Length: 197
Image (cartoon, rainbow, N blue to C red; front, side, top):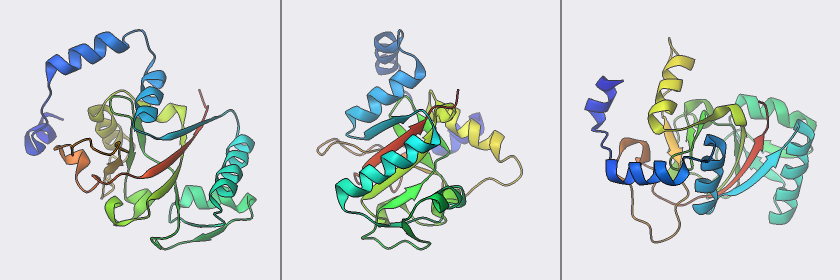
């Protein structure tokens, strides 16, 4: 992991990190993630079972008048067979995107995606609207933990196009580490988080 840090010049502001750790030490990693995600204007829906995921998806679609979605994510496509939605397997910028994710990152409220969800498309070039399906077991504390998780999960064939969605409020400056490359634009993100622990 030190090799990757050296290549991409990860830097840490220890004074900020210490303050955040002191502020959040009584919160679980799940609570920290949800707090950061909501602060960044993400829309969070907690689901106890798969039926609740589909019910919330229908409510989101109704609220936004959406009935056609984009998705190339095989895990999402297999789950959506139970719904009446039309799903296009190419990315049309005007249509919302349905994806799963690799990890949810507590330290910044980010959602880590890879080519498994997006193929070779850059997040900045895609629709402004994302609906993300995730499980509580995918929450990790830090960006480093998410990268270690990718290395462990895909030992022999690492996915390409590893990048996060971080839904910053308007006016917050761009981040300068490689996990923010190509994702500086704000996205309208709904997160359907399924309890699996």
